Amino acid sequence: MAKVTFNSDACKGCGLCVGACPKGIVKLADKINAKGYHPAEVTDMDSCIGCASCARMCPDCVIRVER
Image (cartoon, rainbow, N blue to C red; front, side, top):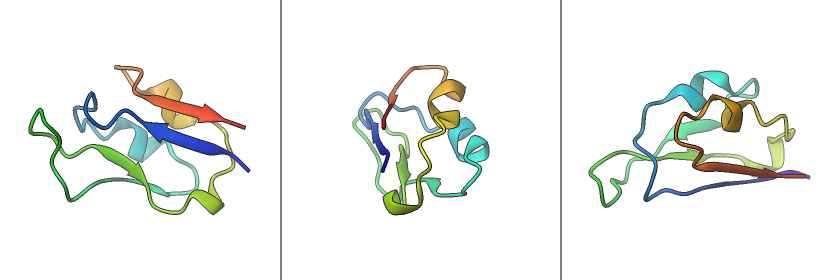
């Protein structure tokens, strides 16, 4: 099983990872981070296939994927 973590405080909520996820399990959170953005988060970690498409798409390198 893969584990995806986001540095929520550094995420600027651009949404590129949301569109990159083939399983559709990444979304922008309802909460706002310290910078005033809606950070990305995984909604269903059990469905994550560990492809790292989200991490490759992130311009700020705030996503870490572990398999």
